[in-house]
Image 1 (cartoon, rainbow, N blue to C red):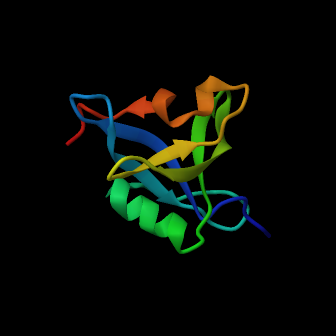
Image 2 (cartoon, rainbow, N blue to C red):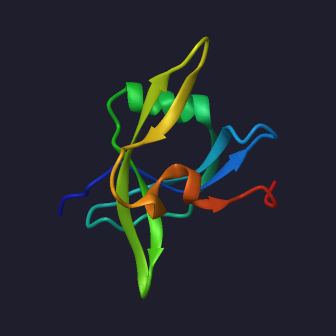
Length: 104
């Protein structure tokens, strides 16, 4: 069986300026199932992308979860940032995933 991504992101942590600092990253198994996630820094997630891993968002889509938007990164002034692909569905963008701020 194949899989549509190596990892999925289910939630994000943001700083006081609303920038993503960490993500909840889950490894994807064959058949597009995934394991329990771990908190991972934005920088480490970008390194996975640079190594060629495919990362997508995952969202609750009743009656279950579904793998959605592809995640990439962009270079800003002095920093790199995670970014989800532009599409017509804001629900699956990184900014609209589960806010993990209450979880340390």
